[in-house]
View 1 (tube, one colour):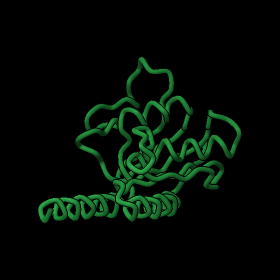
View 2: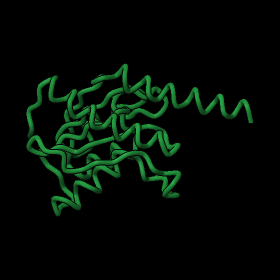
View 3: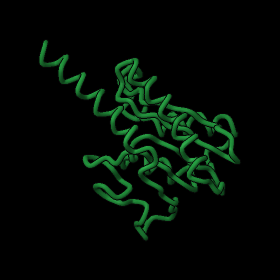
Length: 160
């Protein structure tokens, strides 16, 4: 599995943040994700459930799909997934099925977070795969992007 330094985690999280901004620019919740194997980004994704009419089109799932297609395998052992928001239950399930070795996230999600905020699927002993979890990487920047998006959405709704 890739061993990362804090500086490398920041670099890859900034790539995920750029994808999150792309999601926000098309009025999707601004969450971005990248999959890294051996120091190289092999998968990219951002939230697209609204524009794709697909409830599974979360950033993590999109990045996992991209990575799996590129490497030619639905299993991604030794990979690290960087995502700007703590994964939900659905995304955590996909991460586990893909055998991702490490998950690095930015902001916590107190409503649907499945890496410790609401539930912690990654520490559930009855599950057969456990990724290493690192939370809080560029958390302020990741959280600010989400907060600004939802504030703007509330302001538009109030005007309408």
